[in-house]
Image (cartoon, rainbow, N blue to C red):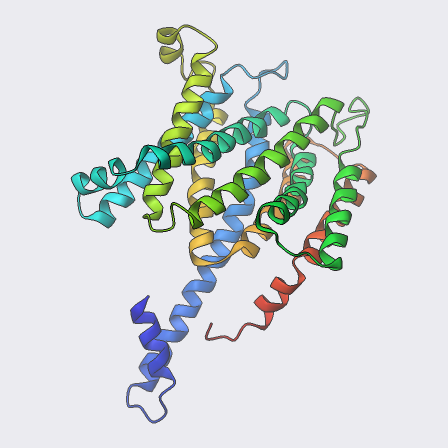
Length: 351
């Protein structure tokens, strides 16, 4: 990063003999950043949508899950934990140094990180459970209501001021979610649908998601602000693995549960594990190189990807309620984040 900033400063020096080469480096850096942004945006949107699609495909013919839902999240948490520890090892210069950095964590910090980790684990399990009560496209529209709940939790926790435009955006978002999630008769052909219990699950999902996100940000800005980002992630993944392991073991005796960890798995289950792992690592890169507005649009664009994939794979056709709700949610997202969008579009090229 220091080299990139040095290049940018040198490019502004008029009459420099190395102006042209540095201009080339600056142009190349901007191009690489743009390509990375497009890549993360496309892959992120596809992964968000793919979670619901794979959950549907992994079901048994009777529509139930033949495998343990917590086991999928558990394997994803372990995968992210291993990758994060490898990154920390590279950062610290050795395995011993990485272990020291992790073990240096106080019991108070472990306890503080336990809460968002448990919430994230619950959310991932709810994500799969939702697909027993609605189609993937409907779920992707409804979960955008987490913008509403996150805004409210932000306002309550941080005292964040929201003007008239933002409140209007949240209201439109709520109306769009209600429209898309209005229970419909799924027996009339392969229509996009949701049942009454699915509505309850989505309401629980968006509040858990908001609480986890806001608490996690408060945590990273508080007791974890001076810690390595990989160390913080390792804490979350360790606790997440423990929570999901306990949830998996609660169904059967310990030894039986451990030996049957992947019982009932098919190729779609393994793809689900990979997708959950990739999503966690990818969103970390989005927040590192870009900002929350990019993450927001990745999540929002997954509505359209999911709708297309649901039609192509399952033959679902959208209801008028779904189309109206998706349009309202899209407009609400733009209205709520209008100042960020303007800033992003008018940002000078060198920034």
